[in-house]
Length: 124
Image 1 (cartoon, one colour):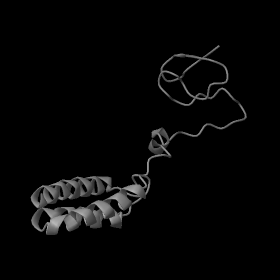
Image 2 (image 1 turned 30 degrees about the vertical axis):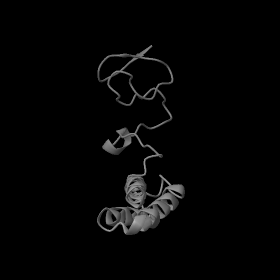
Image 3 (image 1 turned 60 degrees about the vertical axis):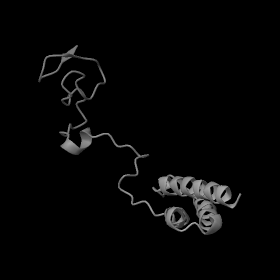
Image 4 (image 1 turned 135 degrees about the horizontal axis):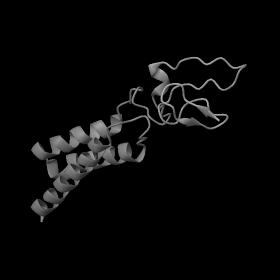
């Protein structure tokens, strides 16, 4: 039975690192132990794409801008309709892995929809 030379914890045969302190255990005579550097203790998440820049969904942006414009210039609901169309296309082709502006499409649809309803009520 072996014990860790650093903390005295009991080492199970075949372990390369102490389960208590994490120090390398030299229990294999033919295998050299190399000390770990700080980078080897970090957990690598392959699904994390924070290092990659996400692109802008152009249709969602156009729908968002048209939705904002529809609050100022309604033109019988035509601008609201344009906002809903472009935002709907942007939301339909939205890819969360490569794009980061889904909120623009949602706000464009909401703004356009409200302004379409307003235009209909004004025409009646």
